[in-house]
Each structure stands twice: as C-alpha cells, then as structure tokens.
Length: 219
Image 1 (cartoon, helix red, strand yellow):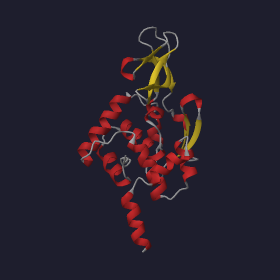
Image 2 (cartoon, rainbow, N blue to C red; image 1 turned 180 degrees about the vertical axis):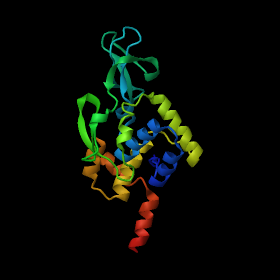
Image 3 (spheres, one colour; image 1 turned 90 degrees about the horizontal axis):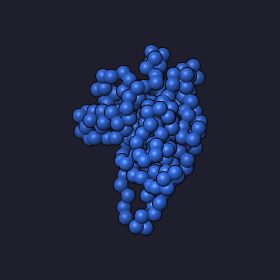
Image 4 (spheres, rainbow, N blue to C red; image 1 turned 135 degrees about the vertical axis):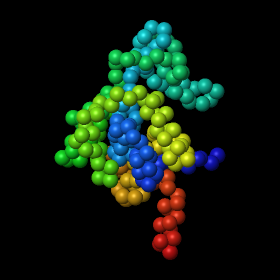
C-alpha cells in the first residue's frame, strides 16, 4: 500500500503566511513552530485529560480493536477506555506548561523546551525568523489550541490555497533544516525532540522537487 507524501510548509510559503497574519501572538506561535520545531502543545500548553465519570487523570494506552492498535485514554479507577472526544480537559492541571519567556535566551540563541514527562531539550532560534525582546512579553501565549489550529488552517487556505494544519510547521522546520541548511539528522533530531532517527529521515525525503533539482545539478 503506497504511503502519502508528508505535508509540510516551505520557507517561502511560511513567509507569505507570516506576513498575512496580523496578530502578534499568533505570529510568535508560528515562528516557534516553523523556526524552532516546537509542537503546538509546547507552545500553548496542554491540559490533563480527565475521566468524565470520576474526574481522575487519564493515561494514554494502545489497545487492539479488530486487529488494529488504536490509542485510547484509560481510567484506572473506572477501569474503562475512552475516545478523545468523550473526555474532559482540566482547566487547572497542566500536562505540559506553555512556553515561558525565561525559556528563551536571546543571547545564546537557544530555547529550552520542557516536554511530556518532564523531558527537556534545547533547540535553536532560526536567524531567518528571529525572536525579538518585545515578543517575549507576549509569553505565555493565552490562545486555545483549537483556536490556533483553526486560524492557521484558514490562513493557509486563504494565502496558499491549501488548508495546512499547524503540525506542518514542525514538518517544515525539519525539511528546512535537513534539505535547505543541510544539517545532520542527529542534530535535527535533537532540536525537534523526535524519539527515533528514522522518523527524522522521513523529512529528509519530504521535498521530492528539491531532490529532483539536486539530481539534475549533479548531472
């Protein structure tokens, strides 16, 4: 079964979208996604998901349904699995806190990321899309995940003629670093926090047009 090509946003497309966005807080969110490879949950945070029956914090697990592994949220107290659309979200308990201004060091051009399970990593500030001192005052961003996702999708549809989702910014970061900046895959893996190197390798093949151009240059 043939796999679909990975969808990503190119540097030129990102420039157009960034120019079209008028809200500074959303602009900063886009720059953190494309320029530094942050996940949306690392930008605006992620609340814990809680059981609709007993309000306990749920854990994510994989179960088998019709011979397929699917993700479900599990309540150990109720001993029951739930789909994402069935659960509630706490407005008090952060699973991942939104990025704070003290995590961004403009002098060293580094961003310290606190991800799931307390995992930490250091990523880079892209010189093509720099973060200014004035932008740090906007942190932490008080934007709902769904609002940010919907806005970005509509803006891409209006500006580029295709409704890209917010996660394509992260794909664009990997493509930019691998195919345009020619950084080694282990380095990009470290910046983006991917668990597997072969996942990063997929993004190295994300831009077939670029690859074809390089082949022709070689000949």
